[in-house]
Image (cartoon, rainbow, N blue to C red; front, side, top):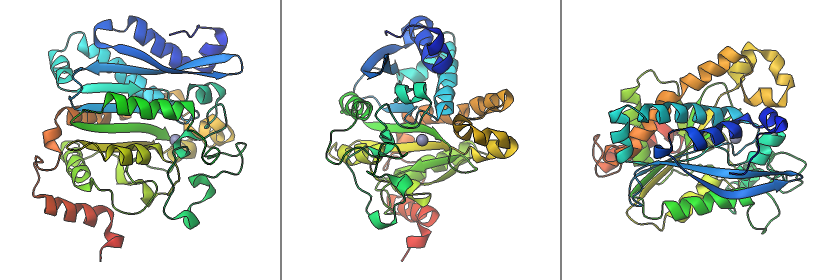
Length: 353
Ligand SMILES: [Zn+2]
């Protein structure tokens, strides 16, 4: 890692400094760190880092945790840092954590868009919204709003990039990492951290590009049934992303569709969208700052958010380590056709014929 701890860097991107500290001092035994790509912007040059824990067998089940795709939404990265801190410290003395990591490969990209985070903006240095940047079209183009991705100008948010151009460096780094690293994995749960939409915390599964049912809804249903029974008072509203809005260019839709060629492997990409409107309601002045719309401002509220999601990340790591608990054919619930019926009734009832 080549990031120097300058005063500006500490002020603008303390998360990266904390990651650097974790990489250098945080229990080296449990961490493998890779620099996937370096992104240049003006006189700054920032790495996209990947951290890896646990079982290194390429066939091992995977939990893939990502954040910082949108540079403004730094609270997601801070939740990840909070969880990594817990895990790394637990693993120094807790045998059950070490045993868990023996059974799962845990890979983390805490800041996919470091330049955006450094600049305090949603897009990357080229003004491209990475989560609208994949070469994939929504099937309801007529109904996709400008926030669903456009090609008008990189001066506006949600810009997709030039039609036909290669994906941005950061998007490519994510896709390449995923496809190289997890080509043989028997199952993958991905969780991508975002913030800013709505008043409640939403857990989204695909698709973003269409209201059509997600092909792996049986597995999603089983996984969420397990979440509901383990944490009956959890706070998450679980739904397909298209129930909130439809977008072009979603990286997870893209990776999912390409993954369809990998036979006998199950992949569920989830997005955690932290609902920031309730923080704004409690502290309306923060609406006047761009960062304030996407992140809690008051310290006590930040601490609460950092604690609030630890059990979800822990649940996902455990679920990823136990694919028999949610992969179709192994699931503890019931027959596949029942799962499909239950899933459709829960999430696609408006489409039921
Ligand atoms: Zn976002």
